[in-house]
Image 1 (cartoon, rainbow, N blue to C red):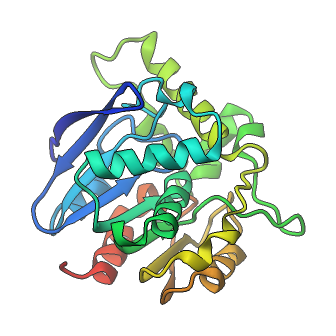
Image 2: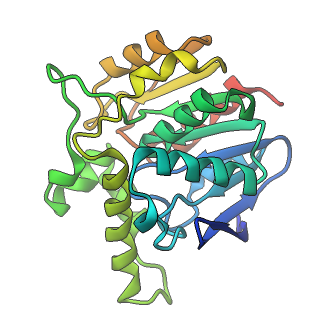
Length: 262
């Protein structure tokens, strides 16, 4: 796999990791539930044709404890604004998965000139009490891999401590990532994002794993119906909620084909 360049930016007074790899037009990536404790094959696939820029979200792996000063949803959105600016992503294409996908959509709604085109995988933010999402914070830890991925080993491999990792700090980082996501989406993952979807004018790709056990597939149509700009919905075969881990080549191909070459 590629060894990305690692940069550091300040977000809300906390040092925050930014990975950068590849060449070509910029593409920002906001990671899904659990964040990215390590570089994954999906990012290599994107970097074949794009300069992939992967900023950590506050509290996620690489994001230190930045989530501790974000008390409201508005605080989180302003942190995203700061991340876009300091990572050099203002005006670029933006993509994300799961919790990161929701924040990518929010950025496109609130700062439309900052996001050229969007590609998102199974975003959080909606809640239908007749067809509710699965609450990932209410699960036994042993069940989480099978909820996040069609192939649970894909999640386990991403989360496994690498050689040389601090045996105490590594698990703390992983728990912190779950806490950070909970601070964004508690309760029930519902941010009432449907109120802001009509502000999104950017062309948007919505991807869903055909075995997603977290966000019901019907939510893809709800998102597509709410977004004002042109939308495309595609399903990734053999993929769960984090389709980029289950099917990295297929997910990356769908995203790069939709976004074009800048």
